[in-house]
Length: 313
Image (cartoon, rainbow, N blue to C red; front, top):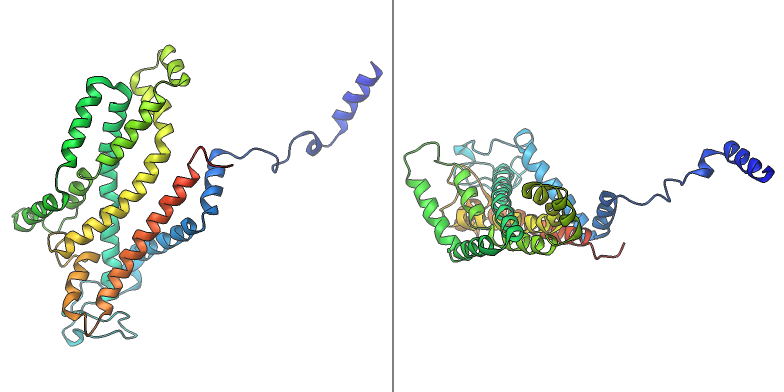
């Protein structure tokens, strides 16, 4: 009894820091572990920094540069200078300002198209993988049908309709282009989500939730979908890069966003006539596309490693 009393008195008088584990010994949360593993990927960290810089420059461009659509007859087709860092085009518009403004449009289209693809692809893949059977077969055949659509030709047709339409709400709008790119890009994501749901729907925690009376919608959203977040995030990062390239190619062909709205694609198209004399006209938007796409790919690689459940702690 005396030994027990001495032990209790020692614990009562001992400092709290000696009784409780320190912050250094506490296990990492999933978010902390993911962030640490992501920034351990140096190229992914560098890509994230580049994307932040490009995004901020596109957002803050109207405050720091010339008006991208301002015309100047006296300053047409000039080379780089202190007043115009990348020179001016045939209408006297500042190329640097239009490059940053085009980045805002291109990034917006890439993010909007990815959002549409995420909504459609995740919904189709989750329903097909969770319910299986005839529902799975029907949705996958629909996915195969969409894979047969030639994306570029469909986008050219949509771009032609937008150019010739009499509805002013669609003239110069980026919404139809983003929606069509998204509707033609969700198939790979749907298959990834379906495979993940097929693997998780038979797990013990799903059976426990089903036995507790949880509805199918609750099980899908609260129990199964979180297990598919990793593949979805990685695929979404790759979809953003693919959507930006698709939009740039479409605008380069003249069927994307129409002038005077600037995008990286139509800036490249306008630079064709000056490739010999003023190559900076093409280098500027081309370099932006290159930096954006390769940075997104690096970030996607980092997210894949950080969210991999089988990776080393």
